Length: 139
Picture 1 (cartoon, rainbow, N blue to C red):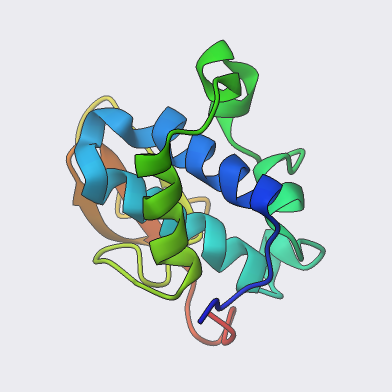
Picture 2 (picture 1 turned 120 degrees about the vertical axis):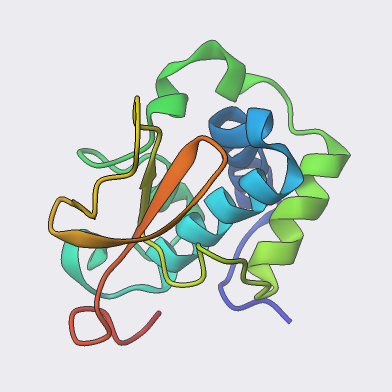
């Protein structure tokens, strides 16, 4: 059962985002990006108080995803990517992205904090950052 509401078009958006942001990190990397996206929709805190749909999350400005400015993001969603997106929409969570609201690809090691949020781990090229439960209890 889905943990957030979505349309078929939004499923495609999430699938395209996951692929564009983390295809080089394989399926788990894409699932982790999906966790961040779903968490942003679920969160009612920090930078995401007005985000209620996948559409709003994908195209949030400022603070959105760099991939939406690249042509690769605008290619059609593949069924494989749609299946991965369904998994995170249905509530599957993966370490270190279970509660993460942010990720980025540093040139070197993951900083302990990024924009005052604590590092929860790294998967391949991406570092993940999560708020405290006091800041964001809904995730």
